[in-house]
Length: 121
Image (tube, rainbow, N blue to C red; front, side, top):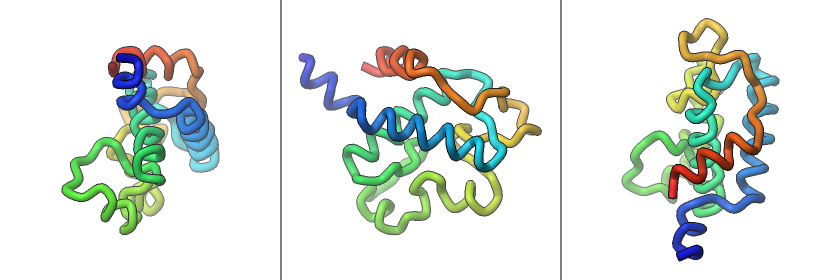
């Protein structure tokens, strides 16, 4: 049972890497995480899981017919083209201060990420 649960979640290494990436990117771009920390946590977990499974943090909030092809195309690899070009984050991970859902945080505690992971198994 433990192996099945672990297959559904990212590795601790990838989770930590995506946490650091998200925090640094938010600070660098002047964006903020969602006011609801669980949204941020679920998105970071999804990015980390895609990094483990696909070798790249493919946007976890979209449906793909062929994830491997999407990774190669790189359009939806985080930060995706809409985020880089227009600061539009479909996942609500990186929000501009004027967004109604933007919080005031550019960091997230590992405990919040771990709590969200528990709800995903």
